[in-house]
Length: 90
Image (cartoon, rainbow, N blue to C red; front, side, top):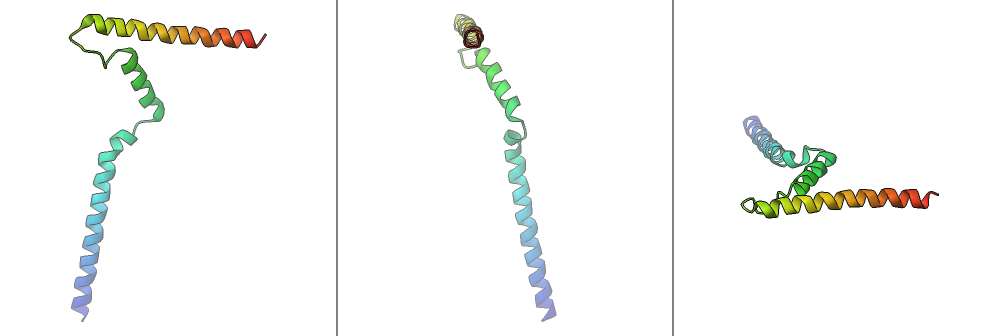
């Protein structure tokens, strides 16, 4: 009877060990996306957006036109916010 209890205990321990290894592997796989901060992810997305990473790299005019338009839009938005703040704080 003790041999059966020992074998059963070893099986449970082995199952727990395998379950823990699977959980660690899943965390390691998902950890790459979760490992960076929200600020770093947002900064990378903004850099890619303003750098026209989604434009066709073979069409240089499209790439530069997209960059100019997006950077110009960002500058306009900043100036507009500053103007509105100064206008409504008078």
